[in-house]
Amino acid sequence: MIAKNIPKSTWIWDVSLLNDIDMEMLEVQHVTKVYVQVDTELPIEEYILFSERAQQHHIAVYALDGASTWAQTPSQAQYTKKWIAQVQQQYQLFKGVHLDIEPYTLKTYEQQQQSLFENYFAILKSYRAMTNEQGLSLEADIPFWYDEVSYDNRYGKGLVSQFVIRQTDEVAVMAYRDTAAAILEITKSERAYAAKKGKSLTIAVETHPSEEGDYISFANKTPAYFEQQLENVYAQVQLPIGVHHLTSWQALYK
Image 1: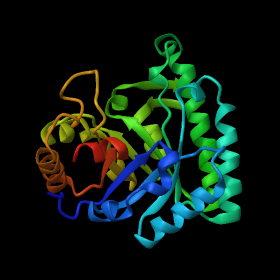
Image 2: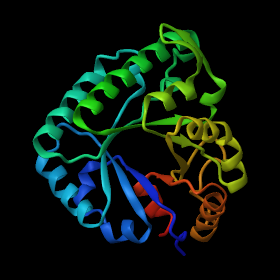
Image 3: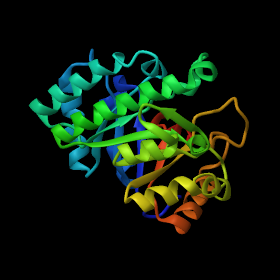
Image 4: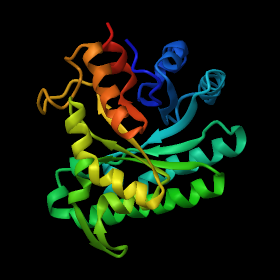
């Protein structure tokens, strides 16, 4: 069973498998874009070949990177930024950049929350300038609860979710729950704010096993149940669904 005509995206973290990826499966699943991990050690030819294959299946390729430590040391983000800009100038491989920076996973998050978010915002602005220059879209992952986190720093005051939505072209809200009702409930404020600002939004769901509770991921659910929940979400909001991540998504069907 395939959730009917729902535009989807997915994360590809393991680029060693890049050119073994089944493009037909992605097309059947209505995947319209993939976020592909940046690995500067991987021969550029691998990215070129993958990009060509994706293009044949009408799938847009986004450069994916980010680490929680970037929020501690923003200079770490510059190497990836330069690599993307250089590759894009030479090969035009990417439709956009997708950032996954999660400062809340750091041990120092509670003590340094405001400085970590200030650094994170600086990275977003730096990438915004680069993507504008390169003609690329800028996207970022955010947890659903960023609408409850306030910032007060040199960028002003407000909610973290709203700042990220304003700085990017699209956010993927990590709505990691296993029922359509819960997914819709926890994304309500982000959906409303993105619509108000004319920004795009993807609702992201988890298929990777989670130690945080059975209600977080679809990992132990049947494919039919998973697809039904996606259909129920899409019927209500007509927004694309991001499935995290490709390897665990495929495992769901085995």
